[in-house]
Amino acid sequence: MELEVLKQRWNELDNRLSKVETLNQKAVKEAVKVRTSSTIDKLKIKAWAGPVIGMFALAIVLNAVTNNEEMRAILNPNSVTALWIFSLVVLVYGFIEAALTSHIQITDPTTKIMKHVTTYKKVKTYSRLASLPIVTGFGALFIFFERGWIIERGRILPVVIFFVVYCLITVYAFISQKRQDERLLNELDNDLKELNELS
Image 1 (cartoon, rainbow, N blue to C red):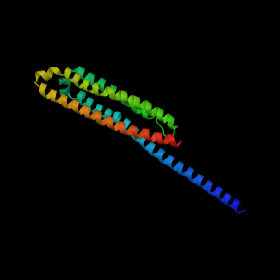
Image 2 (cartoon, one colour):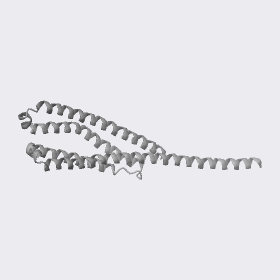
Image 3 (cartoon, rainbow, N blue to C red):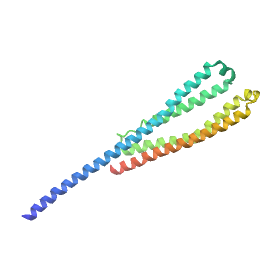
Image 4 (cartoon, rainbow, N blue to C red):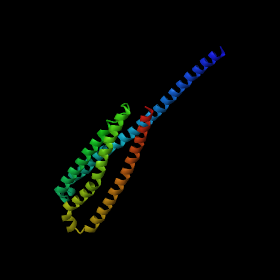
């Protein structure tokens, strides 16, 4: 009789422990899911901030160039065209990159989220490889188009100094952005691996 009672109590205790374990696992999974969702939101904000801020900056710069008579008189039309093309290409690519983050939804299965993150990482790698030579190349092209008045007014040394500073700022911005992107994407990768293990 006592053995039966002990077995019954043991089964009850075992059931309670199983329920507690299940609840703990659900709580841990929910916590990781919330953390992953927060990381995804950070990624989206960062991805959209670039092209949106760039669009406003472009509007201000082009407004200053097109509405200022002195600027129009000095600047070579090829420089303005190059600025338009460069800005539009950068903005379009930036919006494409940002749009890719819209596919990353925490409500999707973890494997699907991982797939979208992998696609985004590939696109980001391509943009990193292209951005540094394109930005420095644009600066050199702009100076090339404006070489007439630069030489005429004896501004070669200040322009050379400006271009060196421009290149240094570009390299610094490139390295800084790369570190930020890698930190955020590594954080997201770790969160997704943990979430996948808990599934």
